[in-house]
Amino acid sequence: MSSRRTPGGKNKPRSINGVRHVPRRLFILGNPDKPEVVEAFSLLKDYAAGRCHLVGAELTTDGQVALEAGAGKIIVLGGDGTILGVCRSLGSRQVPLIGVNLGRLGFMTEFTVEELRDQFERIIGDDTLITSRMILHVAVRRAGTTWFESPCVNDCVVRAGPPFRMITLSVSVDGHHLTEVSGDGLIVCTPSGSTAHNLSAGGPIVQAGVKALVITPLAAHSLTHRPLVIERNCEVEITAKNINPGTTLIVDGQVDHQLSTGDSIVIKRFESNFQIVHNPRQPKWHSLVRKLSWGQKLKDVQ
Image (cartoon, rainbow, N blue to C red; front, side):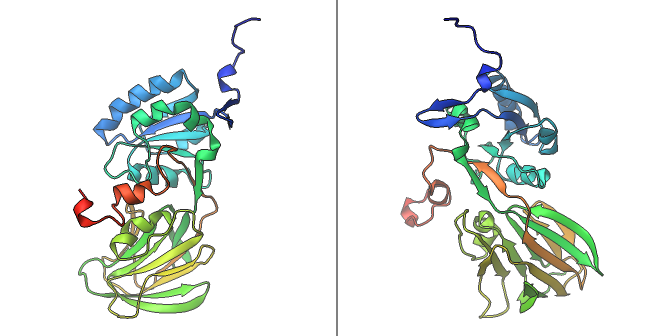
C-alpha cells in the first residue's frame, strides 16, 4: 500500500475520540493596536499554515477581509473588545470566531495561545464546540429617516452627557408604551452583554444561550424602576424626550452616536447570530466563577 498522501488529504474529515472533525478554511485576525498581538500573530500564522487550510492572515479587526477570502472560521487575537469589533464588522455573514486572549479579562476570548496550539486540530475541526448567541440591530431614527444603524453584540446604552443633568427617556415594547425613565440613561443588552455594563449597573446576569433581552435603567430617579427581562423577539423603542446636548448612544462601548431631542432608538433582534468557539478545557461556568469571582467569599477573591 502506498504511503503517499492524497492531494488535499489534510482537509478530509477525520474522527477523533468518536467526534467527526471537518477542517475549515481558516483566517487569522489580530488587533494591530496591541503590541503583544504582533508577536503571537506571526508565530501562530506559521504554526497554522502547515496544519490547516489557512486562507489568509492580517493585523486588522475588519472581518470583511476574512469573508472575502472565504473563511469558514476566524481566529481572533486580542481581547473581548477585539471580538466585539470583528463580530460587528461581519454583519449578517457571521462565521465562528475563535478568541485568543491577549487582553485583560478574556470573558469571550477563552483560549490562551498555548491552549489553542495544544488543541488546534479539534478547535478548527470540531463544530460541536461552536455556540450561537443573539445579536441586536440598533437604529437611530430622526423625522422618519434612519441616521445611524449598527449590529450590537453586547449592549446599547443611552447615556446622559454634558451638562450631565438628569434625562428622560420614553420606552415602548412592540409598539406599546412601557414607561418613562428619568435618570442617567438606559441599557438594553443581550445575554452575552449582561456581564458588561449591565452588571455594573445592577442588572441580572443572564446565561448566554437564554432567549431574552435585558432593559436596565441607569441611576433611575425612582424606587420602582428595576431591570426587566423580556422575550428576544421584542422590539424596543427608546425616545429621547428630554435630554442633554451631550447625550449619546453607545454600542458595545466602542461606537457612539450623539442624540437629539425627539430621536428614536429602535432595538430588535439582528438577522444573524454571533458564533463563538468554546474552550473544551473550561468548565461551563469558568468565566463567571474564576474571572468574575461570582459567589465566592471575599477572603477567597484575590
